[in-house]
Length: 337
Length: 276
Image (cartoon, rainbow over all chains, first blue to last red; front, side):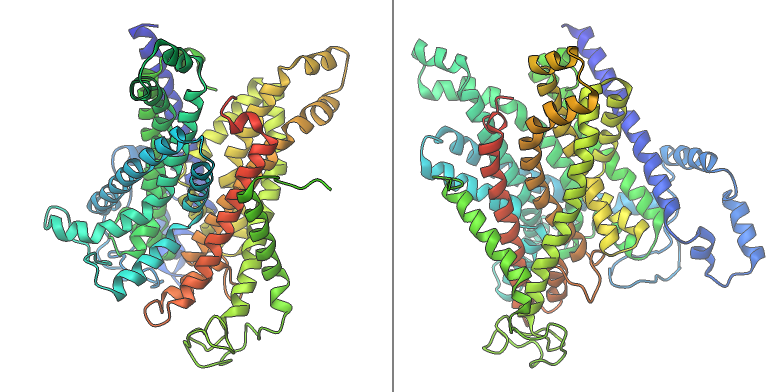
């Protein structure tokens, strides 16, 4: 399985990812068209004269057959044109209507908000990795003890069970009542004031990371247990390798494989799931923007947002698949499970 | 009588917790705990006190019966879609795994597509189509949980379908229905039950998340998630409003997860030890 084999595998994966995204785009397009209320009614209001509606439909080609409209939308999207947001500034969630002032291109708004979400996702992923993996290794290596087995099971059930908004609400309460150095809200871009930025981002990052931490701890523990049962571990023991060597050379290296996969799934979840943490801690990110758009029925933003999130998710998974095939070349031969 | 979960303290804890929560949710509201809808039942935003054990909200409604009702709504809204998902997944997954071919390919592709949506956004977009409320959430939970469940059923079916007794039955002329219902179904049932249990915890997370965002259940119905949302407005003056339902919600999902682990160890030992 040389270089060519890997290339073929990579192309297959890429093709499959593109196919998936095409499916996603069709689904999103159809879904948006199923939402009650026509575009003209949203743009012009329910009492607009028929002539004005006609002009608008003409302008955007809304009378064309749906497949044609879909192709036009998709091509524009690929060219970076995601449409225009109905609302200029989408700060508050509760407010239903929006001032129809300067309409901003959606892509500009996404670009402005992406850094906060990406930073949040990376911080949460870092916390989940740094806490979850060592916990999982520890739990796996000392699984002989009943207490460790029981407590790691209970902790992971709790970590995966506490909804992020419950934990976040608890943080908001504790940290806004007591002054503990971290701020609730008050986001500043990283480039302007790194210290203030971190103060504001730590709590949302922890809130967002809790599920991933539990997931990593659990996956790592299971992976370590699986590897420990392999015959080559017994062989290494028989050869007289020290436990430290065995863990470093055999256990960790082999247990890394499932952890990489979960890592990708978690990253995708973080990018899409950041909305709740952003909302709770007033981080002006991508997720919050899409969420506010749903409340304001600004479906152009929703459509673009869901598609962008799906692209990010599929891309991260594709990268994980490719990395995985380098770590464990057997996957190439096995193909898709 | 056989004692379930012998020697498994955590699974027993989970069962006790779940039974207590179900009793609280289904029997609790009919106990004399006050009228959940009565405005000005007590003073506004009062901390827990003898007349209103969980305090009162901004309209002076007593929280205790509202939280008890919320527990019931949360369980019902989580269990209903999971039941539907399980039935659909068993039918689709078994057929895909057993028949293979284009049907299998189609199912795998559709599952990939649904998987590519961040679950919260998929939920949001479905609720946008169906309108907020019970119907929208139920549809959202089914579509979000279906792909994983189908994959589990399909993978388990593949393992079982390659066993000799299935081949023996096939060559001796058993019908497709007989093969699926008599030979495959009983053998994948364990995996389905385990997966369904974990799916209940996922669907509780989705429902409460959507309700917390204000697009889940609509007033006057309240689930634990929407109670947390209502309470979070008064977080600093009256923290119990948000934290009490939050604690019950976390407890419920915690118990379901623990039960899932316990069931996995008993019903699906191969999966439990990573040998599959």
